[in-house]
Amino acid sequence: MPDKHILIVGAGLCGSLLAVQLAKHGFRITMVEKRPDLRKTDISAGRSINLAFSDRGLKGIKRVGLEEKVMSLCIPMKGRMLHDKEGYTKLSSYSGREGEHINSISRSGLNAVLLDEADSFENVDLIFDAACGSVDLKKAQAWFERPSGEKFEITADYVIGTDGAGSVVRKSMMENRDIRFSFSQNFLTHGYKELSILPKDGQHQIYKNALHIWPRGENMLIALPNLDGSFTVTLFLAYEGGKYNFNNLTDPDIVEEYFKTDYPDAYELMPHLKDEFFENPTAPLGTIRCMPWTFQNALIMGDAAHAIVPFYGQGMNASFEDVAVFDQLLLENEFDIDKTFTAFSSQRKQDADGIADLALDNFHEMKSHTAQELFLKKRELELAFEKEFPEEYASKYSLVTFNEDVGYHEAKERGRAQDKVILFLLNEGLLPEDLSLRQKLDLINEHTETYLKQEVIKV
Ligand SMILES: Cc1cc2nc3c(=O)[nH]c(=O)nc-3n(C[C@H](O)[C@H](O)[C@H](O)COP(=O)(O)OP(=O)(O)OC[C@H]3O[C@@H](n4cnc5c(N)ncnc54)[C@H](O)[C@@H]3O)c2cc1C
Image (tube, rainbow, N blue to C red; front, top):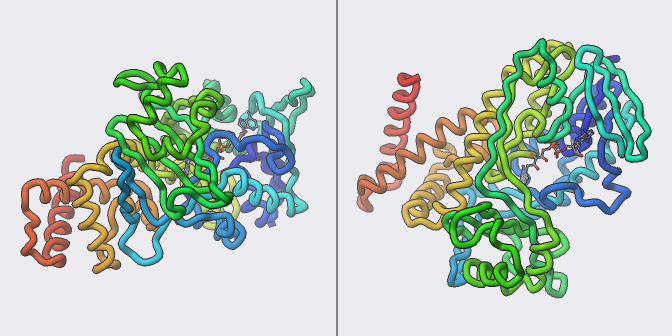
């Protein structure tokens, strides 16, 4: 039975799942969270009220036996419901295979399930309302401060930072002169703002089982359903440039004009838009990459190690997959934490970079390509392949979202190659109607393999 004491900094989604996973093995866990206990206080769980939850996240949840509880909070989303400017809609399935869909889940509901589970272990101590200020990585010692100004310190055998994109544990690594710590943070030109479509007579006002998208070239609006009949709507908009941007949407009349022009059907469902727009914050979006993720007796995980833009709906899923990968390595290394920290940091990095790149790809795909004819033809073909030959073909989206046994890096390489090949063949008229579906798939597979081999040679 492991007898080590592990301090987890940050009780968000990643930290809470990690606490449960490690507590199950018998480790002594202290988890400290900056914010109040979200189960007892009416606070927003932070950015994004609901999230797209899919198979990689589920893999981590299943490992701790919480599948049933978590799935009861989910609304299945079978595809993207595309809204054009005239108000016409078209549902584009996420997969041609039976039963493959993603889910909408409440961030705070999910976090609460994980915290309840962590709380149920005698070997877990949860402390809220205490912000970590710095960490001694070697001593696994961290200093905390409460809003009242009260200060305290905790010393453990190991410290794991799951304290999100602004991680203090990562900052302590950056400031340590004994590590060659590489770090980059790249902001998008776009930010986001959350809005809502409220229920009507307790019911969803638009189709419940889809992720709604209003793609408008440079910008877009999306909406995910909530269990109470509402939708959380997110506007992704450039800070500057174009006719409308966050910097010039400064008064209610311009906001109204923008929504009436670009999102008229959504506008009709958002009578409180002008209030919400000015009450809710605008937040930036960025990608954080760093290396190494471990030094001495400390490790970072989740957004603290690899924050990504949200366009593949994979940040939380990747963080839950982190916990599953970490646990697998822990078992392989017979609970030797030093070896596990090192193995995790070196083995997981490539996949974290993979999903960071894919999320940026999807930003462009969602806001513009989803509405383009060539892209729609490609999707149609891929769905037909997945339906007819479910064992033989998986689109890039399926590889990332539904193939949790394929690493993100591999999903990126194969997915990008397939996309390039299909778009090229369609554009050149090399997939004529008189070819059977089988012949089309063989042609695409053949070109994809050639493309992948060429890429390897280039490297
Ligand atoms: C707009 C938006 C939409 C998103 N949509 C999706 C989606 O659909 N699907 C998906 O999979 N992912 C999505 N994500 C990504 C997802 O939110 C993150 O990847 C996920 O929350 C990472 O979990 P985490 O626990 O690592 O970090 P966080 O959720 O950020 O949790 C970190 C925790 O640490 C605490 N903390 C911070 N600093 C300290 C400190 N100094 N001391 C103590 N505690 C501290 C914080 O209060 C917080 O509770 C989205 C992100 C955004 C911004």
